Length: 541
Image (cartoon, rainbow, N blue to C red; front, side):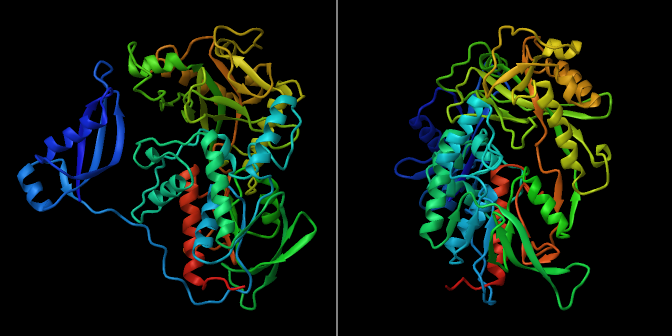
């Protein structure tokens, strides 16, 4: 096939315009097939917004067409097709167990099921249908279920997010595309295969996750909900080494049922703190790592759209505008936007009693009145209270507990106007911007629940961001706190075979420290499935 890039069209173009542009680029007429490889929006010149396409064209006599076209943006290309590696030769005594039904666990289990390994998936939360009801009850009543919330349950934290699917992972094996194709297979819009910044949205992602789960079961796997792994049993190796001190023997579910296990994938999310502690007690090698903390900032969606697209933008032809901002503060910290949710909601995503944490969420249409983002500041292990691998967890908990107190100690989310955050005073009334918040809120002073160096960097950063987005530092923009779970505060160490120091235990995904979003977590789940597949034959009952 011939890949043609840099096809630029006005935002109001139609499908026939793209076909005509391909004919012009390759100097061809008549029948040919094409598919979009990539689509992005060029908004650098607000008076001349354009969509930019790369397309793959199938036509006879490709070499002759290419030679005749003399187009530097046209080349012969081939598509990378994902291939699962050849199965290993060892026999499994027990089916593999995957702990966690977030993106990493789901993709690991789905790939294992497809290859005949009949995995058992254990998820501490509820299935997505019941999970939605439980979370909406929490938002309405402030009655938290510690086992099923925005962090825990089918689909993981990503199910109640913007559903972003872009990733910085370099991938020459086709895993990235395999993740996206799988999502489309189970109900996601086909455009995610080519949009430069693809997203599904929380509303569509819920059905996709459910469909994946049903197919895992149809292919011989099993998924159990309300099934929390509370303990593991290990046995010493006959020839223990510094790298391998024991092997997995069994796991305990809900403190009562022991399941024999020799192959265990730990694909818990970044908030499974009790699981972290249990594994640390079992001497799983792990280290603390850097992450970021801060607040959610809300601005009117139309304000962001006008700034990014110009005053005369047309929502009929343009997606809700996003942005990415970064500033290096005078105190040496980096302050930046994270997990930006165009036309979305701020959500109370707490998972522990007496603590408050927030995140962002968008539906597919991204048509809420506000756009929001986390404005976060980097923190490092040097900022933590001790040298334990769990020190980052303790650091997060400290500020989440203070956020709970700031909100009135009843589960309300603390919010504050930016002008009051600057003045270090409690907000008493809203301005023109009204919060788009899932959950109950209370006016507070968010500087009471952030380190001083974080608050100072946020204030400085927001004023700097005004130079890029007009109105960003408006005094009535809404800040909501706190956001502490930008990524896992630790990493579970693993070797080149994806194994931990406990033989048979595979750390996987974001909670283990190897991913930073839905797609990268899915990719890591596939990698771990491959590692298991290279070692073992398909599981026989």
